[in-house]
Length: 368
Image (cartoon, rainbow, N blue to C red; front, side):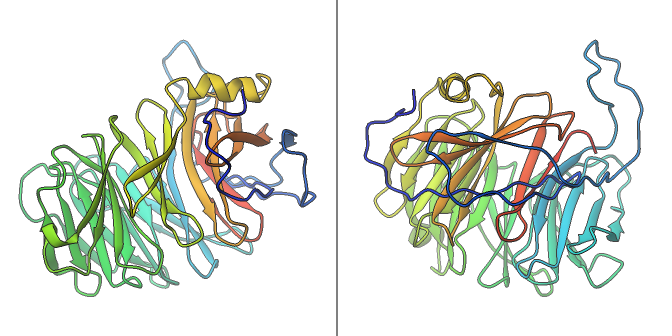
């Protein structure tokens, strides 16, 4: 079943190669492939971020329980990578040699989890944590540059963070259904949105080079804001009723007019944010449908995230199978088609991926 929806294809297609971050770099592949051809990619390079190897006590011992890599991001000038570890630390690596630049050890008295990682500047890396703090790092410096604490309620977790307005504005989604805005320079609280969501705000993402922001929440709504407006009421431009708790949201399209939504029940839908119209909902049986598309080469157990390639005008989806393998799919308005099968990389679940350069990507996972 390749035509999961009936709409006509809306986006162009392209092919790309793959890298893994634990870390792995890809080998080049031909620019043209057949529509339903699946290429098997093996990792070309691996970097282990942590050597903690306490064994898991579960019956299934496919991989060691220890420090995992929860998230990864790259600088906009493609000179470094940032990794969020499950022990609360942040590691930064250079692109050329994949050697560590800094390890930022979080200052905390109890275990915390880094909930999101982001960058929109050459030297700035930001993280949000379950303790309600936002950490800002200047990768040229060995110590964190700034720590911001969420302002209002106790036990408010910072679940997601992103940079907008050319890196001047920090947006934070919280566990108390709020979106807070801080000034990057100095960390001053500029304001908060209180009314758009009723449950945890699990994701905030700015449209590139814009004041527009999309938020996703456990209440099943994705809200689109123009944060240049003076009030929350004036800023709210659209509400997308996805009807399922949201895990990942982001902009895509030639003018970033589209929004993709991944849910906690492992579904995917794509929307047009100006009209709040759904372009396609790929349905509750998406994982089974995608497994059939790969001829069961990789069992699709979960959806990792989508990536928009502006140069090639292509939206792609990465999925995983709980044994470390993955599949990259091309997403169009009317269908999803498999591009690459990722083998012999991770030993645990893939948690995130990011673009490196050209046709190369990095992934991180639950195997350090």
